[in-house]
Image (spheres, one colour):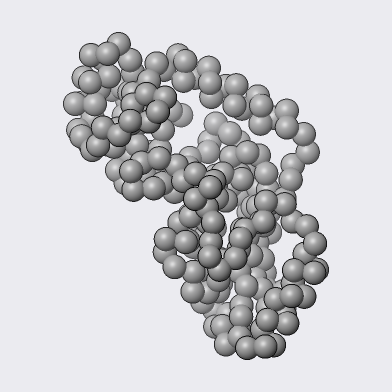
Length: 215
């Protein structure tokens, strides 16, 4: 349930304002509510799990209408697609956050997500760490998904499949430091790209096996 104005519980929040998401910084909730009322608008909590939570100064009636349109659009997009996000045993924290944000974006569009952790070279000796990473991913995406297939080892990779939960229950968690959701264009990794749709997987896996052998 979306919290508005005096229903927002956090003592301090990060505030954005307007269609261009102008950053107003961190302030007390009381200050933010007063600022919203001074311009005839509402304070709406849009990312309750961020630290601190993110709220937007907006016309709540218009905000609800736009969210309703997005849900209807999502339902009319047709069959569910399977997207894929890949991790490694040594994925750095910044890249981890970006990949989780990308997974949240896929889930929020109504797609299933296959999460895959690939072992390369000597990493294959640390499968326990791989499962720990996958459990972390599962927990971090729990606000957006439920697990269709628990983490499972297959060859030199661990796979897991997530499905989106009901739209009204979704809570995105992964944000940039300035409070905006990570943009798709920023969700690129120098090690490898996450695939939007799973295609030509056998060729892709074959290439990776050859790379591992060369090492």
